[in-house]
Length: 227
Image (cartoon, rainbow, N blue to C red; front, top):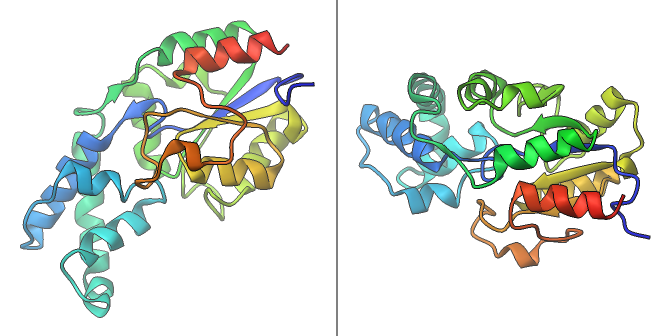
């Protein structure tokens, strides 16, 4: 029997899964770096750093230029500047990946309950979902600072399962990185991965998932075929 048989809900990642947000990160990070007197960096560099939350991202960005003690000394100032700039431009440079809206609609039409779980701070996440017309699809939204721990810890996925009153085996996670897969495995959820996101510079085929789907619409089609 397929691990997707009996699936009744889906937990979907945001950055790299539904939205290409690297251009937003690029503008916000380089605006922050300019304030700190640091030279701009490329989108390619930033792509390797995103996915593990803002604190991890800002430390990694500062570590390109600064020694460890300097990173910590500058961290609060850098984080404040980054958050200010990100909120200013949030969503202006990001774009939906192909078949995201079609995929979400198809999942809903199948009767699946949907949650968005991201490591992005909730103060960035909520307005971004609204700006891109995604918020109406999701019953539950958790950001990286909504709960005590973020992905790859299983807590956010376990919390959604509890919210929905469903066993983990009936809640599929869909994401673009090892964070999503590790969280799903630890929570006991099946997991599908998309091949186009930001997996910390690693090939998607190295991730332990239950299948690679080209788009969210492909994911919806696969889930329907197994139920």
